[in-house]
Length: 217
Length: 217
DNA sequence: TATGTTTTTTAGATCGCTCTAAATTAACCA
DNA sequence: TGGTTAATTTAGAGCGATCTAAAAAACATA
Ligand SMILES: [Mn+2]
Ligand SMILES: [Mn+2]
Ligand SMILES: [Mn+2]
Ligand SMILES: [Mn+2]
Image (cartoon, rainbow over all chains, first blue to last red; front, side, top):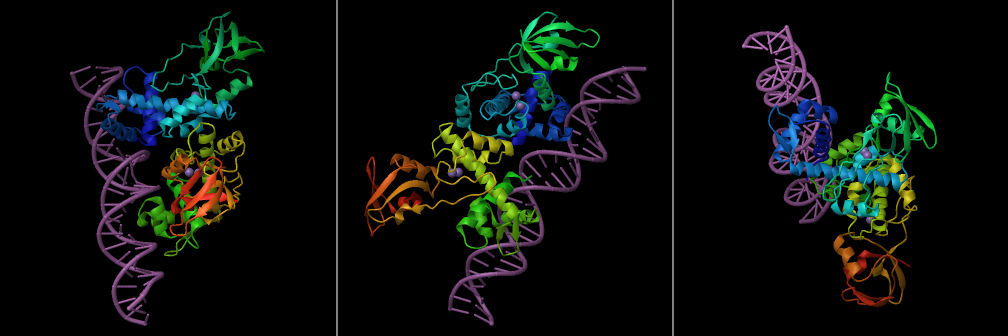
């Protein structure tokens, strides 16, 4: 079995892999894990011995097939628990991440399977992130940054790329949640802000906000 | 915050306190925690510094008010999660203990409160053990060993004192679960075995089994 | 109550994870 | 291409939890 720490490293490497081209660097992992590069090197060596990452000195790491499988299962658990917390226990979408960070390490295959079934085999978590299936397949949905939409185009809010409570609460305040349909009414080249129209209201969105909202066309 | 290990020690000391008169001994804790006496002494010192146990060398320990409160909250979480696993995820009563051993360490007060509410504020876990309330009160139910019933007396199966999967599965095989009503039809002085009659069938129970079944009269 | 046995504590070590400081390697650029 | 800078690794240490072996205290009983 792997320790919580090892699991968190694998998950971090998985996520960094998604965002980066090529190998994941020691410093990037250190930043993601909120730790020091020296500690990362130590852990990488351990993961490498366990055949969970491919590692050559000074070259950064990639996940092995086995390591990637473990990372995906942790993400699966994280997102299933988030779905449970929001849809069964009535938590808000900005309240569940930290709890899921703990729950994702509970180690029981039947628990995950039954939870999945109990929840009705959900495909997306409360933030629009896809939930990996039992066998580890994960289809990345084709979402766009809202900021990429042109004036006049329509879309449906389907995800966020900033998962912080502050951002999620801001969206909540604006009555912007998953499923909201919108149309771009105006784009300002000067500051890349935009004005959108939803069923309920007209909203002004800064560049930062529009960049972190994902929409399906 | 306290580590998982510290929490498990507190819980073990709490349970040993219930079973024993006076202070809980180092060796008893070592046996319960499946560790060595020397390790227990170390941990006790740490818990004592944190004011979670009262400790004087060679005198064993008692929980402080604070330590007892923490222990009870862990037991609360354990039993609520067991209830969830059985009543929402359809686990059998012999399958849930180990998973709950992990879940009991998830650290979130709102999670426990909402789970409690979601479950309908249950008073007993799947094994008949009382679930402490949010404020830590815990009423010990007045159950008797089935072996104490006399011939002709009636009772309702309400709990078990052996929580092992083997015992629980045996009861299941005999169609003995919580809520089953029974009447003692015969007691054998020689081996302290007994014959009982339920709605469904007549059963022969050994001394060991009758000792580990708790009934309400 | 003295002596032997059991229980408990202490001493000293290991393992996992972390850190700082120093050394090494790679990358960049004039 | 050599020199500077940045990234990475190594060395050495600390902390929490554990262990074995040995010492100390408490207990039991003759
Ligand atoms: Mn999350
Ligand atoms: Mn999420
Ligand atoms: Mn249990
Ligand atoms: Mn139980």
